[in-house]
Image (cartoon, rainbow over all chains, first blue to last red; front, side, top):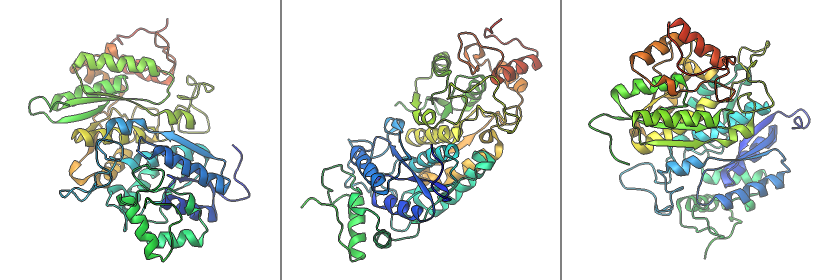
Length: 228
Length: 228
């Protein structure tokens, strides 16, 4: 592993391949040398997301990449994202504020992995493109969750590691994320957000609808193709 | 998955196959119907630990078992426990208070998995046999780490899940753990603690030495065989 280029500190960036994490990566690159981490956890759109991950990493010339598998999340189940017998398009149940696409403790798994890698690399910041205000209501996308996770990092690792999570998008709307991505020339055309894993995005699932509304509210055109 | 036997609540128990987790399981069984979780993370003694896990689960007649793999921890490295080029027997470095067998963020990965499974099973307590006072100095074996993790669980999962971690051994010495195991008739003869993965325990690694001292201080004989 070569040292960071120039004097820029290393940062681990969780990059799913979606729009939000791509914009978080663009923000991290302003001050840090990024290392990209992708986690496959048996989600339906796994192969398509991984393709987007590598396309974005190639675009930015990032060689430090780690693709990790969390197969037990699919084995444990409990989510429409990892259980193909559940409906990921119409996933919000009337009796819950949390959609059925919620994967139990998912971001805790992702951050634990990012923190392990960061500690070994010697990176301190961990970037994640979590969005609270315009997200789907997942408990682990709220600012208070990240505040607690940072408290945990203060006692969970070697004290000299000084790991901390950065959430640059946490209070942005999808429209603001689109504008920030365009301003930073993030490769939004390479990203993938759809939950249903088609060759073209469905335009109907919650993730597609949030994304399309973001582009519309930003007055911009989404560069990826959608099913007519 | 059948409901809990009788009226006892379900609990997820992290069971490595070592003595401490076996005693934690014995304590959990006093009030709960346990579900046993074993995590393989590329540690050297993986196969032997898994054998101990199933032997203990058979002994207690526990059918709810989950064996999960965290292969990325070995890929990430940074520990003598998962890296066979490092010396696990003489693992404490002069320049650090934390031994070289520390696996970066390991217990955060284990607890995240236990919490995901607990949420899907409908179990609230998660038992882990972590020991602070007579342990090896791992940061994620201290009481303050579990206090922070429980704070995190309060915001990381569905609010109705009410997950919480129980650490019944956290302030016990190894001798007290041995006595508690003998009192509860825990199957200590089925457990495995050695870091070096032989057919008989080495008696020389840090884990063996802590265990042997615990039995000696408790005035008891360790029922497993050691290399002469």
